[in-house]
Image (cartoon, rainbow, N blue to C red):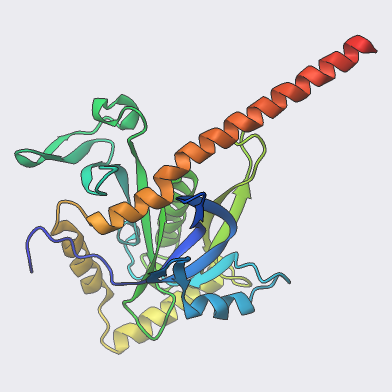
Length: 298
């Protein structure tokens, strides 16, 4: 195996809750209230839809066929192998990863090579000032049973999605006694409003059991699947071990190509969010002023 090259799960496509569109000659992110499943091929309109997108959308329970749940299977029993998340600092021009950390230690690219340093979190790190460093998560899930080791990747820089997914994976892992890869799960899109969003819905991704299945039923099914797999000679523990070695083989898991995609998809969005929040704040101030004026007149 080539040293320094991180071996990550094979990716067949992407899962997203938004897309990149062209407005006034600029590529900008556009949020959505549903999932999209795309291939790894782009054209001038953006990422081309994967055939699974249409298949799952046709089964959607809502009449407008919005895709808000996706049945998935975890590839690994270890939650940390399915969801990869760390603080990440990108070079905005090249997409190259400059530093990744877990809040305790970090791997940082320097003129002398990759060095290990303390990671105080972005709020307390001099290198991360100005919002240059943010949490970045990648969830690998299996959608196509015809390719047992092929995955679809959901990328996010949202704390809500990362925190919720991390909790769910650990809870299901513990409750099933290390049978996470055998559980019938689904990605579920949820929305909530916060003070900062000025009551505008913010969408994030949750991980739940599939519709109509409770936890006891899911665990019984997982045990049956595990026993059948072992009888066939499948060794899940070895798969997790090899995956763990693959991740550890490189200092940085993210390629420059992926880095540029992340910058296009998430970092440009910061300016748009700030502008929309400022606009909402201005409208709210105007409305308050009008209400006060009406009271004075009355």
